[in-house]
Image (cartoon, rainbow, N blue to C red):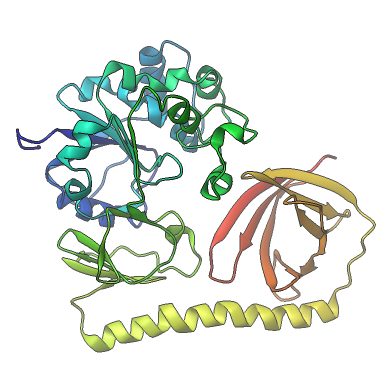
Length: 407
């Protein structure tokens, strides 16, 4: 629990399903923030001991629906756990019984390794702001603080769409910016971007005359490497202390070693594709570095070149196909196909430019396109009218979509 002189902070996560490989890293970093309390509402047990400031509370998806329906005064029937992200801005209302003693409550994902939270969420900031985002360009749904006051807890109701969002099964990225990340990162005003709903970003911008919101870039994402977590302190390139490392991209990369050690050391190094115990001997760490950071990425880039070359000699694709489209994040993917295969792909980022798809002769469900570089896809049929579509780029990052076809 926080000391009396500090404003009390509670962070909330709702997680349905088995805990992932990186959960123990999250817990380790929570333990080094003893003046912040973490409430994780979940439907699974965790075998390892919990830090004193982390509380696992039993909650099923149906239990969430019952609680949210009661607290929000509307019928909630979430079917997919990913949809819970849309409810994050309402956690202060939904879980209000757990938050009575706290000055601030927050939303917090578990794909995070924290540094020292209190060194960034200072008493000065907590005294002067009512909402705190850890990026400067959009609300950070993976870590965000709200002053525990009724008008702030109900801030989400200022969206004209919040009832529709909560009662729909579609995921709208309501907690952030309705999937308009690319545009707002580029500098666009969220109020000037065509959007399906009014998100929390819309609300915070509209309320800026009445509400003090803290916006600053305090985090790291992607595959930067050069990160060291040492007894609770997280630094980048040994010079810059940061609040947290968000593993959103790291955790899905096909090259990343997805393994939680039996014991997490007091000092770890987070490279581009693996997390390393800094206390291991030099030869072991050097070998792992070569394997995960040099050899595996090289093979990931080089072997598809060979596969593409031989597959392109074997396959010829016809272009007389019908067009189908599917929503993909904040844009569209278009596929053309015949009765037996997928033959070309385009992305709606301007005038449509179709690229021929060449199926791998050697690897099932793998396809390639070639423009400036080779693009690798995995296309797995679900049924006659739907496929899983994955794009895997040169550094191993994966983007996913489900594409529907009209019969």
